[in-house]
Image 1 (cartoon, helix red, strand yellow):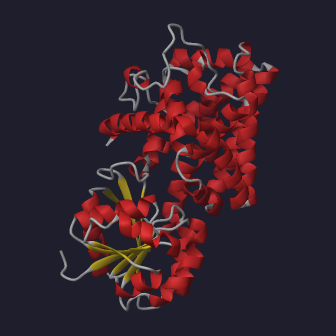
Image 2 (cartoon, one colour; image 1 turned 30 degrees about the horizontal axis):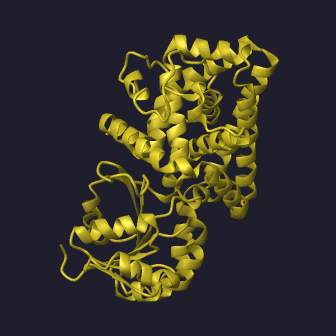
Image 3 (cartoon, helix red, strand yellow; image 1 turned 90 degrees about the vertical axis):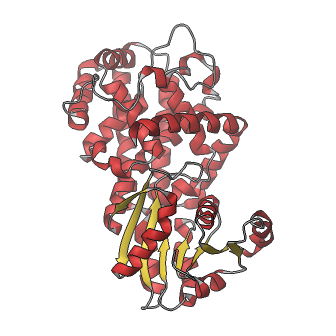
Length: 427
């Protein structure tokens, strides 16, 4: 370890705290700060870690740290860098942890002194996931080889897989692997609340694919709203993809209502061929029955009710329309994306199940009310993202969050076990 080098962290939310703990455990000196009213709480929380010094402002962190990480909400990055960037220590390295790099890099270029080097990063997982083996994007934007090597050495304690991208590549890939995944789960939660349902209390939502839907939806709503809003609203690629997902949901639902089975089958099969190509169910799938049935919040019924899985059909339709092949980005995939791809793959690569889904979509009205609310929800999320209003996004998210909150603890525990099981298979 380089003698005397220290790391600054501006923003001590869940991710900033995780980085502070991991880096200090590895022996690095960490200088950290958050809003002034959080100072005393952070001092108390980290008092048992002599390697972590909580400071009163970003100015103090910036002027004494050799590598400074801005771990703040994407919507606030410009204002925070404007405030503290000019105080950056001469010759230091600066990076950020936001999910959308365009505004982050723009802020660095605008407000940082010319002698400051820029090496950004993005851990493609949440703060509750072990970073070992997970993708860690590194962006060498304005830096010497020596500076970039130092950042790699500092972050090596996370034991993540380093992925080297440009800002543009990062934003496109994160949109491909995260934006629509989040939109699908957010829409499920909105639909269940609209129908006044706790889905684990209904036998039609228990077991198999439904377990993944429920656990991951609750896991997302247990997080902070800005984790998803920044990526969705500030990334133009994400906006386009969320809009297409809403259109795919709407168009498929109209085929359900009209009873156009042949048109529905033709569209689904075209999407399957474009996304999954020659893959077969006997290949090494991400998920299997024994995994899907293991993690349930309710008692699995003896007879499984059939579902048309509109959310999954629309996902593959959306990928097809956008020309996205999800396997191309597995090196940068998040745990949630792998789970979403896993259940989608499971559905589309089992011919009998896919046929059942098509038949159910046309002939069975059991899920019609749910599908209607899901369609409304997908369109509403897309509209909120297109408008770019963080307040309206937050209002909707936190309303649904409050509805499901009583089950967050259990769902998070089960969701963590699901993710652990899948990561053991796919990493």
